[in-house]
Image (cartoon, rainbow, N blue to C red):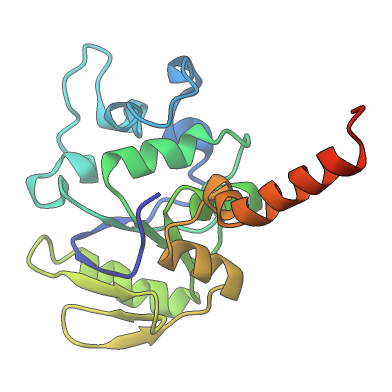
Length: 201
């Protein structure tokens, strides 16, 4: 998993509320357990017509937001079923940070495990960031995880809270496997001692 330290990028405004995991990645595309390859189907039913052509007025199809790395979203983002493919699709598309007033718990935790920083802020602060995102690709935000600050294109600074352990994992690029590998020396020592103590096992 890539480290998340400081992100300076385009923010796309998506003020819809209750965006669920089936809207993020429709169930028809859940045919693989690989983490890659889902980005092309992100928000498929909102991005594409049934003939495969793009829906021009969908935010991520607009030229100024095609390379967005930050999503400023409406309330209750990631609700619905607990499919981990949702953060996989978001990460594969290139979005590294989502800002909202609230997230569904499972999606929230899965995001951290897949290198995505979900930030919860009060509505009035989300409104400020939404308005900043609506300015287009020249209005870039900076998300500094170490300092726990978002800086708007106009220089306004908004502080955010994040769990200390989850922050540590993102800063160091540690998913569950990475956390386990950090303990590999201790695991090896334990296994060697266990083999000597119980050779019949």
